[in-house]
Amino acid sequence: MSDKTVILECKDIVKKFGGLTAVNDVSMYANKGEIVGLIGANGAGKTTLFNMIAGVFPPTSGQIFFEGQEIQGKKSHEICRMGMGRTYQIVKPFRNLSVLDNTVVGALIRDSDVKKAKKKAMEVLSFVGLDHRAEVSSGNLGLPELKRLELARALATDPKLLLLDEVMAGLNPTDSEKVIALVERIRNELGISLIVIEHVMKAIMTLSDRIYVLNQGNLIATGTPQEVSVNPEVIKSYFGEKRYAKN
Amino acid sequence: MKKLNLKSGFLIVISVIGLCLPLFVSNPYTLQYFISMLLFGYLATSWNIIGGYAGQMANGNGVYFGIGAYVSTCLFTYNNLSPWAGMLIGGAISALVALGLGRLTFRLSGTYFTMATVACLHLIRLLVMSNQYLFGYEIRGAQGIVLPWKGESIINMQFTGKVEYYYIILAFFVIGVLVSYHIKTSKDGYYLSAINTNQEAASSLGVNVMHMKLKASCISAFMMAIGGTFYAQLYSMIDPSRVLGYDLSIQIMLYAAVGGRGTLAGPIIAAFLLSPLNDILRGTLGTTVSGLALVIYGLVMMLMVYFIPQGLWPFLRDKLSRAELKAQTAERK
Ligand SMILES: Nc1ncnc2c1ncn2[C@@H]1O[C@H](COP(=O)(O)OP(=O)(O)O)[C@@H](O)[C@H]1O
Ligand SMILES: [Mg+2]
Image (cartoon, rainbow over all chains, first blue to last red; front, side):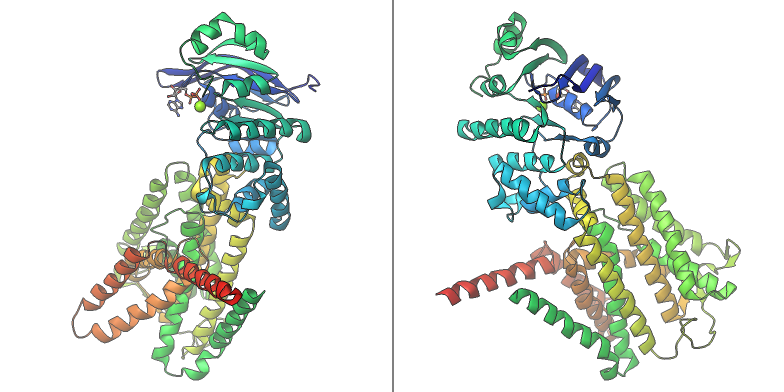
């Protein structure tokens, strides 16, 4: 699957919030076509890392390369245009807009024509299984549907790389299964590379080609799911203290 | 399909009434009510682009009305420049001021932008009030400028009757509504309502938030300024407390809020209902009990905001679609 070209690379990323070092000297990469998992206890710095990659704020130091181009310090909308999409751990729907119009906002970046963007948005909505809810106001959706909407909006921007921040958090096992299948289809059918933050251990173990483990801002392990799951430091710091296996 | 016909039918009837109104209303005082309705409908529509669609509370946006009025009036009075050209210059200057204010404050939280527009309004009013001359033009401070009569003509935008003014503001109003409609239904409209609800999410979906806010603010400022020029030509006199007063800004904003911020029709409907109410109350009660008109007017506003906080138009639209649904289900039975 992966043709071994690097799509995203972070070099020695540091992020400090005042006295707190949220991300400490992290280096990581993702290949084209890969699903990379990012795990770690609450407050480990996963979302902060995503925010830097997606351009919400710049790293205190370090470099980020997207398809070989340096992107640290670029704005979110520029990075989106380059082909990176992201979802939010805390969903951020446009509550005044319908499900379809939410998705249209994403689609408009590739085609300024509203009609064409609507068509594209409908295709994306049927891909994620929300087409029957297209006309509903997003303010009336439940959490599982809101998570899908996050996915749909990001997909509508035609990303090459998608950053998913806990899209399964708060879902029951059945809904989680569906999202796992959906994420696999995103990679296999759409050819999009993914970096996935997840607390649901089973999900991350099934999905990921490789995993990075963060602990209090530090990268403590990396490797295949098997390698990571037997790493003593991971077991100690992650599995040992907090049991997320059952979410 | 049926709904579409109803809508276009309604629009046709309104257009015909609008176009033929001066044929039935010959009394200039009555026509004045309609001119004022259209002017406030136009201004509320202009405000709505930044305050409604983009959701940025531009509370002092009346400053652009004042800038427009003063710029075209100075150019007309002292340089003999036609107000039609003067209003474009006033519009451009207003848009530049809006650009500067936006650049300074849009990066910060929304409150700063609101305060900046209000501060700008007060600052410019004080500047105008306390100076006899500004940039070499005799503006006469608080006294204001009386526009010289240069002869009835379209070029001078000066007329002895009210009918011509009525048609000019009708044209401005229609253009304003078309601009607003175009923005709302195009990419810009989607982007602005995304910004309105969640800037961070909008940004991550490729929306250049800064650029869009600046664009909305400049368009709104330009349109307000043109309203200011019209006002100056209509009344042939301007002074800082009238065209740069905070109450005007608040009035425009309230129309948009009461009617339904961010909707196309809401601000217009509210302006059409409330501006004549204001005029009539002041006309009838103003002379008997001073202040009573304002009290009643304020009370009406308060009640509307209290009972239909979502705005008049969203409220009516909701009721209409529900009634329609009921009718449909009844038909099926
Ligand atoms: N904008 C911010 N300002 C200050 N501190 C922050 C900010 N964002 C995150 N943090 C802090 O950084 C640390 C990492 O947070 P986060 O990246 O959200 O962790 P995770 O997503 O792994 O649960 C936490 O201690 C959090 O409180
Ligand atoms: Mg997080």
